[in-house]
Length: 241
Image (spheres, rainbow, N blue to C red):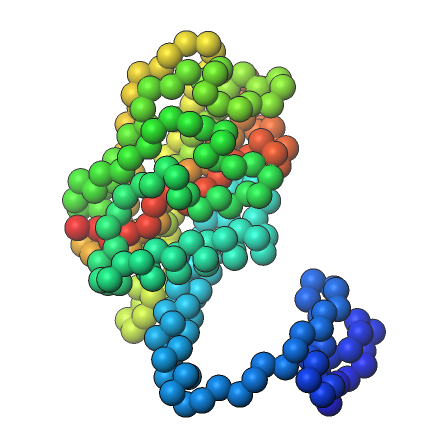
C-alpha cells in the first residue's frame, strides 16, 4: 500500500513502486520474486558490494576533509563503483596490487577531470615500512595543465588514506598529505618525486588521491575556488608489501 506525503507517493500500488530521491518522485515496476538458487548465486556479489561500499564510504569521509572540490553524492558513488570494480577484477581480494592506471582514475569532481587537466605520467612505488614514493614525469606547467585565468602558481597535493584499526575491526582512515608547488611558466620541469611517510603497516590497504589547486601568487594561501578548476581523483588503491 502506498502512502501520500508532502513529497508525493511512497510504497507500492499493484505492480508499481513509488519512491522519492533527492526531492524528486519516481516510479518503477515491483521487482519479481527470486528463487533460492538465484539468491544464492547473487550472494557473493552482494557481499562484495556491501564490503566495498562500506570501505569506500570510510575512505571518502577521510579524503573529503583535505579536498576543496565539491564532494557530494557523485563523489561517494564514483568511489564506491571504482573500488567495487577493482575488487571484482582481482582474483585475490585480500592482496590488491598497488599501482596507478592513468586511463582508469576515479574522478571525484564531475566539473573538472584530473585526467584532462593534468597529462603528466604518474607512478607509485612501495618502499616498505609504510613509505610510498610517487613519481611524476617531466611536464610544462603552462602547456600541460589547464589553469584558470589569473593563476600563476599551482599546488600538486597528494593524499594517502591509510587504515586505523580498533581491537575488532577497521575504525577509520587517517591521512598523510604532501604538496609540491610550481610557478605556471612555459618551461619544462624535471621529473618530480614525492614521498609519503605513512603509519600504514605491512599488508595494509592504502588509497592515494591527487588534487590540483591554483593560486594567484607564490605567497598566496588562498586557492582559486572555482569548481571547474579543482580537479581531484583517486589514483591508486592497494595493499602494501
